Length: 122
Image (cartoon, rainbow, N blue to C red; front, top):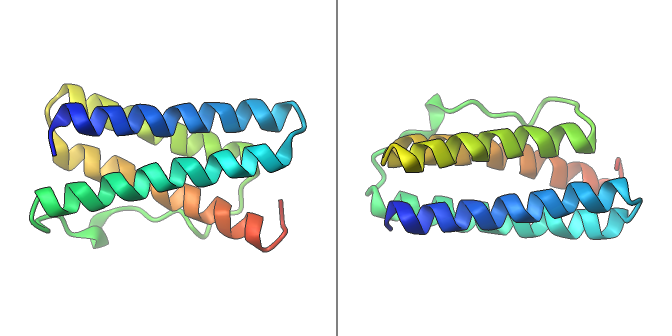
């Protein structure tokens, strides 16, 4: 996995997040939910590839997990978006560990949002 490959995947996830917000504000909640799932799949794939590439050198227990926070759909999406932007900074710095950590944190917001969606709380 190269930094360029990671950057492409982050951009795909950010595009899905942007489209999710756009759909949400247009009152198309179903499409917003679909876009959240698409962003999550990109993030999961990137984490998987980075973990393999880095040979499991990163310990997840030092990474903040956001699942317990009670936020609105927009807040979850914006937090994930901010963290993915920070991951892009890591790409520019050629720091794959920073990329991994920020993507992992973004994933926690996206999965928390997905859980709320599945429970019908959104």
